[in-house]
Image 1: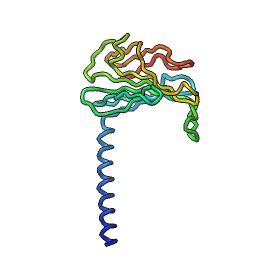
Image 2: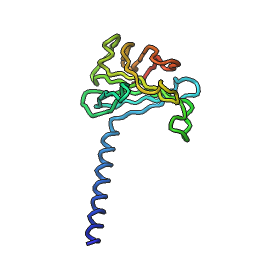
Image 3: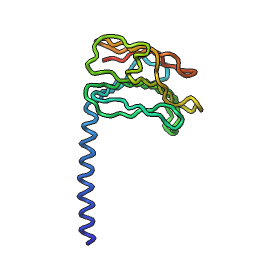
Length: 171
């Protein structure tokens, strides 16, 4: 009886791990990650493009927004992350700002500005040891301009000491 139980657990584990590996491979096929040279001093900046993905915006118990990513054909998520002084020994050992938004994959050259920016589900995030400041904020004004080579995002100051207001993502 013990041998049968052990054999069942072993076979289940092998098939379970294989399924997860396949799902992870599929999820990362549509992700492009780049390091950006034009970054504030002593910071590391990266950009990501997640094709066939969409943002699902929710609110936490304090009323601040957060997002999850789900699959949706025809939509691309763009994410910019600026990190400073990352001390790997601590969860909050550093300072990070993030801008995330989505655009239709077939969006050609043009500008989205003013209240139209709400359609992009744009969020600004700040993460640090800074009580009351950390978290995501909805971007309700600003502009997103797409050309054949880049996307330029300009946002207003949303938190005190904000470092990222204009970014350029290369396509």
